[in-house]
Image 1 (spheres, one colour):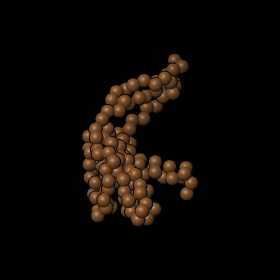
Image 2: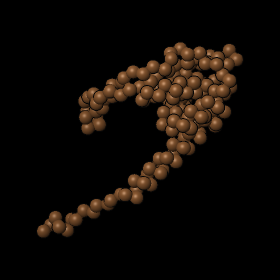
Image 3: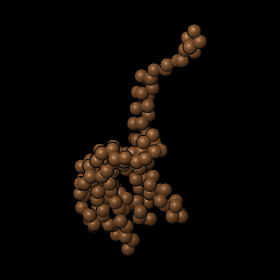
Length: 155
């Protein structure tokens, strides 16, 4: 696997962990990390981040406001392979940030990677997709289609 593939794969699992419902994420993380010892490098801590946007989507940037964020960094050693996991979560949920960091460290372990993709990331991705489908159906049910009345424009 090349560095680009590894970065894209890590980006994909971070996306899943960020969007996952909190309850299932905590349950799956607890199951996956049971019996492992993580060394905290940075305990979960809350802070603020500046949210930025662009005018018209492509123009100058401007500050929209601030959001609360929790971050956490942990180290894991399995069979002399050390990995560092990071977790960032919007809001103030320190336990969620810790779970994301621990899962990130564990997903980087070659001996556990495939098992975790199958047992944690894929189930969370399915739940996210199912919730998104429900929201899309709910939105589609209330959709209003306006038709243009070109005939009246020529009067």
